[in-house]
Image (cartoon, rainbow, N blue to C red; front, side):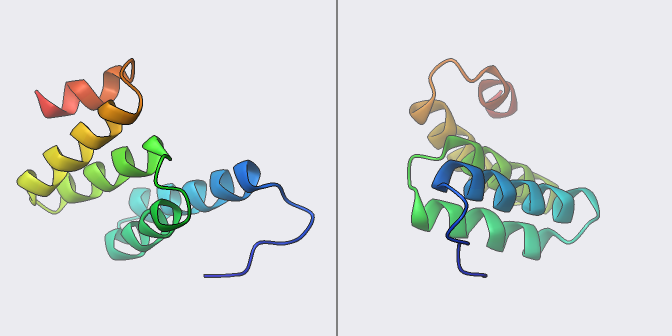
Amino acid sequence: MQKKPESLDEKTYFTVINTLGTVYYQTGYYNNARKQFLYIIKMDPGYYQAYYNIGLVNEKLKEIKLAIESFKKASELKPDFVDAYYHVG
């Protein structure tokens, strides 16, 4: 993982890392995507979108129990996050 450039605030930096993970996910590089999302969680455990995205990766890899855990964590962090509830169901 690259070091955060001084010119970027944390929110922007995590948005960039999350977007990169999303691109990896959309192009089938699931392990790379997971690494991006896990990095965000390590740096900011309250970043609900990263938990949701890890859930999507786990879902795609047929790791359903892990996916559900991730979606539940995302919904705990952001109770009005409808997409997370949808995937748990």
